[in-house]
Image 1 (spheres, rainbow, N blue to C red):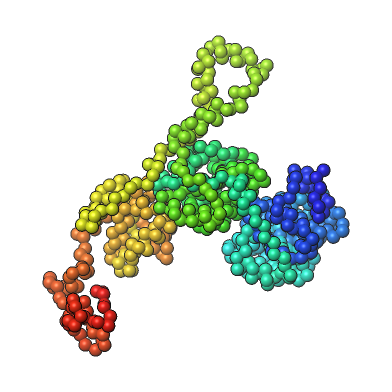
Image 2 (cartoon, rainbow, N blue to C red):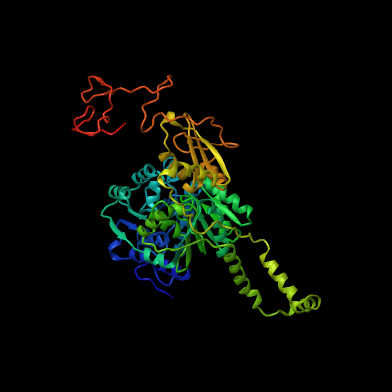
Length: 604
C-alpha cells in the first residue's frame, strides 16, 4: 500500500484507496514540519488539489494523537466556501478523506432548508462546511456553537471577497475562539486578502505553489479568430469537431447564458445552464446531469462555475473573452486535471486579437492561433470517428449470428454499411457555414474621397437592424464613448456596427442582422446599456427627415439663431474686459491685429 509521510494514517489509507500515487505540490507543501499547528496563507492555482490539502493540514489539529474521532458535538473545524456548489463539493471530498476517522461532516449552505441544518447541528458534527451568509445566520440564531473550534479554513478566499462577503467573514472569524488555527487558501493573493490575513492570522506561514506550468502542459490552448456575428456558429462547430464527453462554455452574463442555452438546445445538444438566477435544486440537478452523462455541455458564468469539479471535463470554450489572466487560468483549470489532458478554446473576434495576445502573454500561456473548424473539417472528423468505432472491431456474438446472416441474405453489404452510417449520424447537429476566415481588407479612402466612402460602406453593410439609444446631443453623447459601450455591454464588435446617427434626444445605431438577437440577449430584459441608457429595436430604418446642419464649420462663423446669414461672433480679449471683432486666429503673422505672440491660440 502506498504510504504518505507526515499524514495521519487514516487519511493516508483513504488517499491510497482513492488511487493517489503521490501528492500534488500544494498537498506536499502543507505536510511539511514548518506548517504544523501554524496559521497559513496558501496560494495555488485552481485544480491543484487545495481541498484535500487543507483536509490533510488540519487533521493533526482535530485528532491530536487519536486515530478516530469521539462522539460528535460542537464542531471542531469550519470550512468556508464562496458558493453552494463548491461548499457541497468540499463536503464530499472531506467525507471520503475522513471516512476511516469516523468524522461527521455537515453542510450549511444557502438555498437549503435551514431547519434541517439546525437539526443536524443539534445532533453534532466534527466538521462543518458552509457559505458565509448561511454560517452567519446560524451563528446569530445560536444554532452553530463556535466554542470548540480548533481550525477555520477559508477556501477560495479571493473569490469570497470579490463577491462581497468580507463583512460576513469578519463576523464569523470574530465569533471563533482566538486560539484556533486559521488557514486561507486562495488562487491569488491581492492586497485585500493580505490585509484580511494580517488581521485574523497569527504568525502565518506564506506558502506559494507555482503549479501553472504543469497546468499549461496538460491543457492545449487554441485561439480561434472569427467575425463577430459568427461567434455562436464557431462554438457549434468546435463542439461538433471535438465531440467531448463533457464541455464547459463560459459566458459573461446570465442573459448570454440563457440565450446560448436556448440556441444549443434547439440545435440538438444535450445542454444545461449554470447561473446565479437558478435555484439550488436546479443547479444541483444541472451538475448531476453533467456528472452522470445525461448532459454533455454546460454553459455557465464565471461565478456560477467557480470551484466546481466536473469529472472527465475535456473541453473549455471561452464564448466571452476573459478579462484578466487569473480568469483565463481559473476557467481553463476546470479541465486538464489529475494528469488528464484538456483543451481550452478562445473564440476571438478579429477586433480583439491584440488584446487577447497580451492576455495570453501576461498569463504565460502559449496558444495555437487558427480558425474555427469548417463544415468539411467537422465532417472529416465525424468520418474518422465512425471508422474507428469499437463496434466495428468486436467479434460477432453467437446470439447475433442468425440475424447477421439474415441481413446479409436480404441486403447487400453496401446497404448494410450505409444503414450503419445513417444510424451513427442520426441526431447530430449539422455544422455551420462560417464567414471568410480572414478579416476583410478595408482600403483607406483618399483624403478627398472620405466623405463619399462612408455612404458606400453603409450600402455594403448588408442586412441590418436599427436601434434607438436613449441618449443624444442634449446629453453630450459622443460616438467615441458610445461605440465601446455598445460593444462591451452588447457583446458585439465594431464590425457589427454600421452607421451611428446622433439626434438631440436619441441616437440611431445600425447593427448587422446576425448580431441583433445576441445584442438584445446580452442586454437582458430591461435593455439597459449603462447608467439608465436603454436600447430599443426599431421596426425599420429611422425617419430622420432632412439631415440637420452642423452648428459650425471649419471656415465659417457660428450660424445665427434666426437670421439666414452668418453673424460675426464676439470674442473676449486676454484680459477679459472688452470685446473685439476679430477672432484670435485672424492675424496670419506676428504683429498683425488679433495675433497673440505670447500664446498661439487655436480656433475654438
